[in-house]
Image 1 (spheres, rainbow, N blue to C red):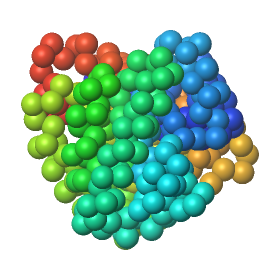
Image 2 (image 1 turned 180 degrees about the vertical axis):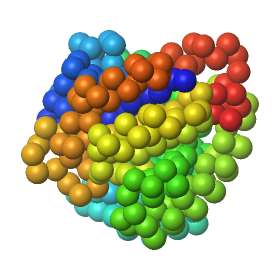
Image 3 (image 1 turned 135 degrees about the vertical axis):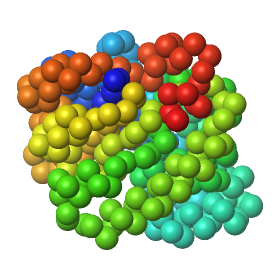
Length: 291
């Protein structure tokens, strides 16, 4: 069994950047997703170029974050400060039904891929802030861009509700709703990926425990893991305050935990990356490792 341990929001702040580097150098982190519109993007890119062992992908931002393009270029997407709406429902409807919004969305997504390419880093994978890359409109635009810019993998969120509830029954209604919504999106996205040269993992863990990827949960997950490939994503930071849904110092502590590493070794789990899985795929892509 092979597992990817990924940090989201790389480049959002210096505190997150420091946590990513610490978790990779002294912990079990294998990859990170770069937010190219983040306040500390330049710092993150420089750190990544100096650390070739860290696989770096694009953390696409099309909701609840800042755009790369200026407001005048995408007026139907962002406010006058270049921020996307925090209202995911309204934004989702706009992407689905507004021709102007879809045209501007394509421009912004291309600009984010271009900014990543300008770093000179190989593109490990693509995922999305708040998983908005799985929105059908976004996903259709994403697939050709991911292949054009040489991505090796793509996150298709598919968590395990039963395992999450066994560990923590807080936010149970929210978790059930997430399981339904992302279960449907996952099935649809995997169907769209047939014929594309992109790797997915069979399971992706982190949604149900967003902001709470504690050591106890992760150890329990690793002990029960029974799929060939999986991705676990975290939101680490060295900032002691953190945020409710991440980033938070608890995720960093888990990535640095000796007992998490010990469980991985005892179970014979191989820590890997999307490019490594791609290299092993031997021509069988999204329909094989992600089935």
